Length: 76
Figure 1: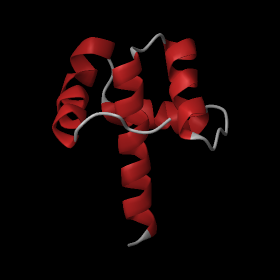
Figure 2 (figure 1 turned 180 degrees about the vertical axis):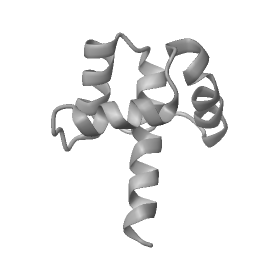
Figure 3 (figure 1 turned 120 degrees about the vertical axis):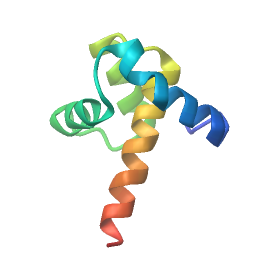
C-alpha cells in the first residue's frame, strides 16, 4: 500500500485529524511508536484502523506523515 492521494489531500487530511479523532498528530505518532513494530506501511495503517477505529484516509495520512518526519530526523 502506498500514498494514493495528492499532497494537497494529504495536508487537508492532516489538518482534520485532531477534530475527527480527538487526538493531535503527535499523540498518534507516539501511538505508532509504542504500538507493534510493523515495518510495512500497510500493516501500520491496518493497525491504526483496527486498534483505534480510524478512517482509512486519516490512518494513511498519519502513517505517511510519521514516515516523512522520521526520515527528516535521520538526515539531520
